[in-house]
View: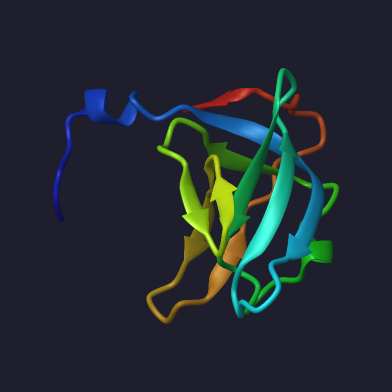
Length: 109
């Protein structure tokens, strides 16, 4: 296992976000476009879990996102962050919901 200094971890800006809207990206098998509220801003985030979850599984729920990644386009949609999930060695993905009482925009560490 590759080891990192804790200072590397602190570089990531992870926040709680509320998925306001989610829709499958046409002509793709795995991509879902999310509109996520972080309190002071909304962002578009693309996630590749549509083979295991539907947009309805995500709408109205809070999750943890990484915000300070360089934007990247997926099927013409710019993603401005990344959804954090758990994944088994076999490729099974698990969503990690955040309790309702945790405010949108809360920093995660």
